Image 1 (spheres, helix red, strand yellow):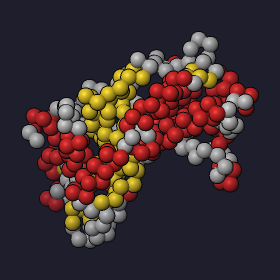
Image 2 (tube, one colour):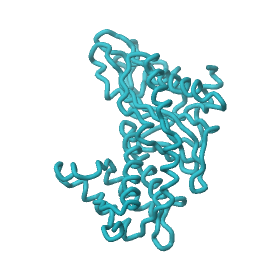
Image 3 (spheres, helix red, strand yellow):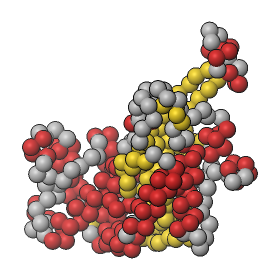
Image 4 (cartoon, helix red, strand yellow):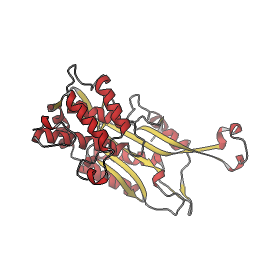
Length: 320
């Protein structure tokens, strides 16, 4: 990969996650960041840039017909250090070559634009990506199995919302080498049921709730967080946080693309996008799992409405 190609890694439309993150280039990760090691044997971890390259290379092999875009990368929790000759030097006097950095957490996406679909007049591009968090790794031990998160799904091009189904996410991938990482990534991509995912998302347009149902739903979502463990076991395993719920309520009124109509009606596709938009405020560690959870939750609502079944989160008089 040439430096020119690496430098083109920053997209103009890459706010797939927003909370506490900064945009970086692949070249920056490769040239400016040190590689963490396992302290007891000084063995190297798999660096962020090799993780990104492995996923992108796998996508290029499995989807060779068109262009595979350069990655959009977000990082957080910068870890700062210094070279040995700068020991004792005041931080404000450090020269650039005396500083070391790496990022504890990193997330990235890679678009595959020649594979796309259209839902509700909105273009969705096939997208792959992953997350790495060194906070999930014991770097004070000897070299051990390393943890990653990888996904395949779609990106809504008007808002950067990611649409991830359960079979498109591997939230606890454990590997010991780049080769194993590529193998597991290929396995996930090949097992992903793309047509089924598109069909299920498209069906969300056919179901609508009104303002009373929406208010009942968000009220029950807030109440859910305070139920005891035994009560929660009987209900859908909702991972949406209180701050996300507040964002969903605000965007139900204000969002330019997905808000309710003038009479307060909103179809489940628009509601789903309010949820996926709110998941972008999560930390890098858990935004993929919470994004996937929103897909499961909105389909849980759809199935209850379609089958006229009781649902804790829906107004009972509207599903009978």
